[in-house]
Image (tube, rainbow, N blue to C red; front, side, top):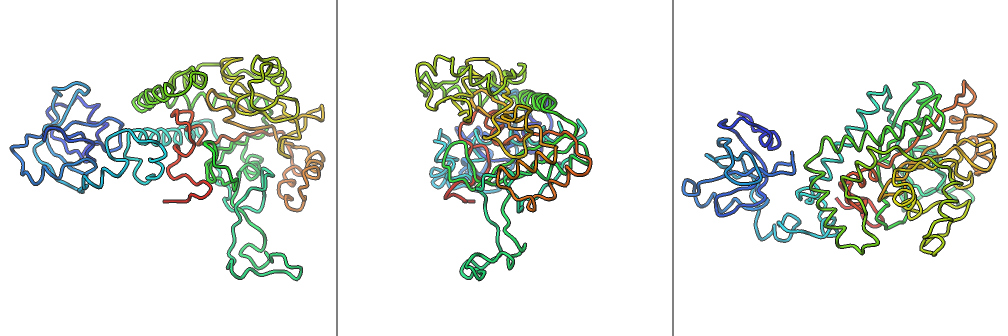
Length: 479
């Protein structure tokens, strides 16, 4: 007889069936009631043991965090909170856990600070909070692939090692095969990359977008879903050195098509979590509500986690231009009363406080801002007819601010070449990208969703380090 996952047992009505349960002990009360969890659900199953029928030496080993296998009968529960429980006939200790050692870890059954949990990221999966977070992270991963597959997209694996800087930010991790104690130099004293593995400077990618465009201009519609890297020395709750991006690219799409696809996609993901992770979302919703109570009233989110997900799933996204957004912000009470930390004027990028005002106060729905000044956006974005703005778009969410950035791409070779010159990008470095504009160029568009930001939104976690299994940040590459 095979063991059955706890999630399936709790949903079962097969009372009277013989079952095998394997998992980790969450609690053992009165030498009788064992709470067991196997990660398949946030809920534990209760196993009831008649202690007089078992060796005392075995009972002493049933401690928090120990791994056990119990065999018995699934029966109707006599207690509250669960429909069924296991009447134990046999118990085997698969792995012991010293109670004194457990007291020093995140597995100790009490509420821990998130900073402490990050220090023990190898063990924090065992907690209710992180079990829920990473089940939802998996669900979002699956939902993303399902959404694009069902719409006829092709998944494209773009390079992690690249010689291009798609964002033009320059904050990239260098990849080399050199002995750093003996780096070869040219006659003028510079690093001689011709002797390196790839014969030229190579970095970890910040985006798969440029390569995804190549695929879209042959396969029609593609998407990437992979790791990206940014060597930005930012120790904030919103930055990681290693993170995951979803980047669809679609041939023959313009900016409106791009907005339509993005809105459909984000609604789909929000609905998927609400429908498929009910118990995990309810737990995180309650956790978020407690967190909100500890904040000053002005910093509290007016919506619960579930309400925020429903907010996105059920509301049409408001679409405004950057120029309109600036006008709204400058006419707002916070601006007039100098409540904004950052100034608002045409030509500068919006900050999170401005984005959240538009979503949470002004429109009370998700917002898409379009047509940003060309000077604050990337070289590949399509120049608008006014020669001042580009066909860019940012999607703003409650509690998060910007969650998606995208644009219609510049398909006109002459304009793209001029933009390369304006951004000091050498054409010979991107000849392959320019070539796609020489052979059957077409309008096309795409966007990028920072996966961890989506997981933050879906779980209510406020620090990006808490939605990725092993965060990579300045000074931290543990585990």
